[in-house]
Length: 338
Image (cartoon, rainbow, N blue to C red):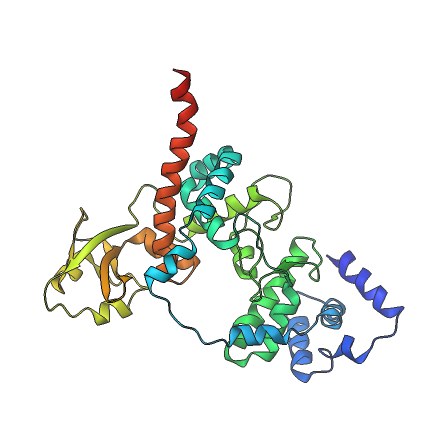
């Protein structure tokens, strides 16, 4: 990392800087950030000044972040992901990486269909990983997006430390407009905590190695409490007059057991023990029509990956269909040979 950073610094020293080159460095808030990082001792002033001399503000990102957020109902959300293209590509990816997926399941206890599903939803198996330089995106959000500046400033620091630890050029790492990177769209902090070198080449490369991406997602799920073989959801119904507004609002927490939910008028329609923690998940299946599910521990784990109950439910459905298709296609040649 030092070689990469100082090579870039040398290039700057032999050519005159323009105001555009140094606009980050002219800002007092950026200088305070540099001072803080140097004081902490993780990065040198030369490294940080080289990064900010080369980083480019991306005001278009602020526009993306400030677009009004409208929550789509389930019947509009689901088709964007549960579709033939994602499923077909997923089965093909599974076939190509079956040995790696089996190894991840054995080591981390996460089923192949869930890992494949996450890779499909996030980046279409590495096809759409983002074209922004992560430094540009995170610096823009860290210093020009006050609403979440603290979060993105932390992620910028994580990115710079990641680059040093992994001996990578911080200016070359690419990702989404929010700084999520690689096949699994890990934020820099997630990378540092949960990315793994699953192919054994000495690098945690989620940008180019599907093997590392598979292992990293499996590790993420295990570290967040995934239980191998457990259900994700159970269908449910409401007793007449049940007031579940508070339960629905608590959708990202496992504060209630199934027994608690029953006492509030939520009746499971499948086998599940009373002492199991669960969340109530309403899904508008068509305009004005709602069905209910109980999200269990593994459902909660999926919402740690993406904080959306719709995301978690569609991932569960895709995983079931993906497994059925994969088993049907891989069993077919054996059946024909008999």
